[in-house]
Amino acid sequence: MIKQFFGLTIILSATLCSAQNSFKVIPLGIYGGGEESNLSSYMAAPVNSENYVALDAGTIRSGVEKAIEKGNFKQSSSLQIIQQNIKGYLISHAHLDHVSGMILNSPDDTRKSVYTLPSVGKIITDKYFSWQSWANFTDSGEAPRLNKYKMVSLDEGKEIPVSDTEMYVTAFPLSHVNPYESTAFLVRHNGDYLLYLGDTGIDSIEKSNKLENLWKNVAPYVDQQKLKGILIEVSFPNEQPDKSLFGHLTPRLLEQELNVLNSFCQPGKLKNIPVIITHLKPVDHNIEKIKAQLKEKNTLGIKYIFPVQGQKITL
Figure (spheres, helix red, strand yellow):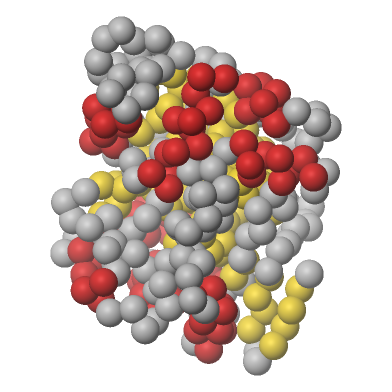
């Protein structure tokens, strides 16, 4: 369904159809808290492949069940899809709303890799797969190690293949309440790219240059129209005080950062890149406020997409 109002097109649930489509994204969880059956996680794959990677893993099984209901998989078993179609996990940071689905489903899962920055992987093995919290299904950390999940440490800016898929990934650190790290994942298939950002604050508040560094790295793909979409969080409406953001974005701050990205791009190129809004906090009337505020000031003409749990987006 596409709604156009007040000069801004906001796509509430969408499949962007084009001969140039390169990726499909299935939202397994779209919120940043509040609903434990709908927390941050997105399955992504090349458009003609069934080999997915999970971008974060707050909710897994409940989201897969929603995707089955919406006809996105031939299989009727959510466990079969988790075991066979999710080939690995790209975990941006170790907060529970981004990892709990992976942890809780680990006893029933199959062998696969978990890709993280070193600081993020250490939290996962030390705090969660620690035997005190949960059995250690990884190949790192406290013994005995059950070796189901291979923990793969990512080096900033270095591309590596995502095992058992046709995709490659490059990690860029983000600041999520400095000094804690989150991650942006630049996923490549052939010559096209998909950018997923975990939770992040803006550079000016986080006293960081990590978003600026990311924008400089992805701007050439915007210019070449090889970047097919950006998934980025907006957790709070503009009324949220800076001191209470806790490393998150508002519509105003997203607009600021997209203008920074635009400054590194050729004129008019960025407006062709869909921006998927993730990690909304479903309290009070936050979601309605965020949508309205993104509409009110959209000087770049960005196409915003608000994902729906289980509903496929093609980019």
